[in-house]
Amino acid sequence: MATVLDQITTESSAADVYRSARPVVSFAEAEVLAQQFGSPLLVASRSVLLRNYEAMRAALPNVELFYAAKANPADAILRPLCEAGSSVDVCSWGEMQAALQAGFSPDNMIHTHPCKTVQNLTNCYNAGLRWFVFDNENEIPKLAQYAPDAKLILRLAVSSSSSLINLSAKFGAFEADAVPLMLAAQAAGLSVKGMSFHVGSQCRSPEDFHHALCQARRIWDKAVRAGIELEMLDVGGGFPAPYMDSVLTLDVYCRSLQRALDETFGDIPVRVIAEPGRGLVAETMTLITRVLGKSTRAGTRWYIIDDGLYGSFSGQVFDHVEYPILARAAQEREQFSCVVAGPTCDSSDVVNRDQKLPDLEIGELLLVPTMGAYTCASASPFNGLDLARIIGVE
Image (cartoon, rainbow, N blue to C red; front, side):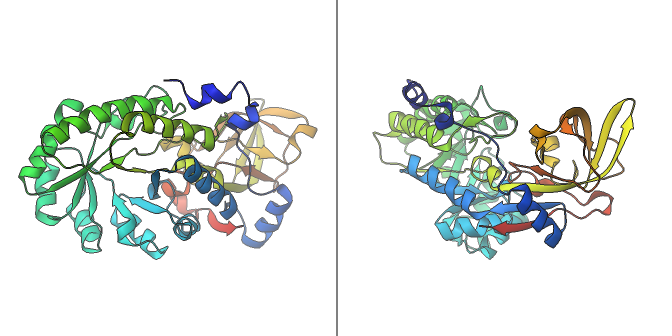
């Protein structure tokens, strides 16, 4: 398949095709915010969030967006998206509660955890949620007992060559098992209404969606021939964000996905939804962190900052990404290789062992962009340290 990217690279500059990590606040603004709210501080930009949301909507005109709340369930993210008309994807009662408090209704939610506790299932079902995902036969009796009128989505296992994390390693039914699982759910009195897949986290190439969609269409046709009345296709998430390296703009990436959808499912009536998480919200938050201490160890400069792997940098552990760390006027100052470490007493709490930074003063502020996804969501108060405060700005 000729991609949208192939068509526009000859007539567009790299700036039109790729996007890089940029902070949502300047150093001058960070100083004011840090004086008012302290540090570490996560700053969520409403304008950047809505810019990304509208870019995805424009490039995917036939796709409903269900924001993946697991990426960042903060009210500063959920509420603006709700007000903008987004729907939401939740995986737990806790995420559903956060979504309800932000203004979402159960009617514009789906529950995408394939293996739920009974309490998770019943709490969400009793609150009015009706769309649930499954991917194995042992989930069927649970759903039949506790959510008998639910609308089910079967999650498929798919492969991806460019994703950072293979989510099908843990979840998703294999192609040969898909239709038998749908028939088993139907035999138990349940209503299977859709299929879903996830190409994997930080999927850099939209081509991977095309391969997954071809597989999904084969299964869809077999299911329909078997008498299953499908109506929804959930293409999941995986949209990438810029960290140390640039990635495709949302416009280019999503237009390529839309073309793949048109080629594989454009000839049949189907409700298509997506679950953007990282690609939608990562760029919307910037961390303001402060240098707590400095030393020289074995000839190497060390800086201790007030956030680390147990806090907002938890994404380095669980999400396998590295974040750019920016110093004020760094290009105008001599830079040195150094180690940047977090504030806990754990010696493994090291953010970067080969960072290039100027000679920093104790108390100096640093900015870390692209901190909106899988950072505060997986942070913990280890050592009794407070998590970074989250504030919203325009």
